[in-house]
Image 1 (cartoon, rainbow, N blue to C red):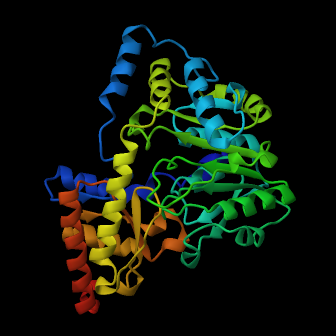
Image 2 (tube, rainbow, N blue to C red; image 1 turned 60 degrees about the vertical axis):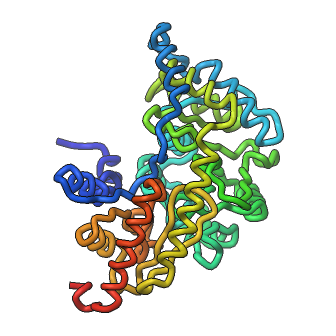
Length: 399
């Protein structure tokens, strides 16, 4: 049988990146003592009052077809939120609702790129970006995010990769997996570059409420001069501890949104009305859980740095936001992937190989900060012991 070329483009860009996560889950089901530190699920349940809103909406019959653009109450809540954060009017006709950030970004990429185009994206990057870009037929152009620059994308590094094929810059700030937050000046420089070279800016801002103390977030949406070429995507998955509800959105110009709507409606019609009702309530007031999550994640990041940096050659990053820490394991002599599997087998601590997030992290692993404090400290102890064994017996460790 003949298959469309998209199946070939995506053949190696799906679930294979999460094999270690799947293995750890299976080991736990088999009775192994596993501490799960792979994926970024909030460490608290969805607030009961939000679940109650969704349940009440279902009981009131809000289970029928939804508005293709999104339910009016959710659109109004999003309009109010982004008008306040952008410092300029963001109207309902600039917003579309989707089942999560991933779907919103997929639709946006399909709307502005196609075969023959290049999309510039920081390396490392969130694990699904390569597949999202490939799905549109565009080519992913990695732009190295340098540790000496705090893993922040710079306009100069982007400019060095530009060609006549360049169509869009994909930003992610606060960044997964590095926890970097683009400074206002760097966002300004990227905005100016996009204007100069007629580029779209797609901005994934799902971690914008996970800022650690002292970090300041700047969205390209706040620069009116690029209002016609900026698209923001986000969701309530992280900020409101509701990843399973799949409630996200895109924010762009009215013209972009008008053109995107028919494409969005070929996939789905908004999101479920009862989830939209919950989203509207969630966005109408500050998140009840975000501040406490930020505090816990920042505290755990600090403890991990104190307990592990320099132990057995490990080098621990210091994120500015988000749910993750990166550990440079290159001095162990193992790749990040080999290290992650060795750590899982010998200690029961499951972390993600850095290579799942791009070639720039081949010698790193990503560690989620989302396990409870008592288990977190146990995990740090196991990682430290494992590193010391490697340092003392390098030949055996590589076997």
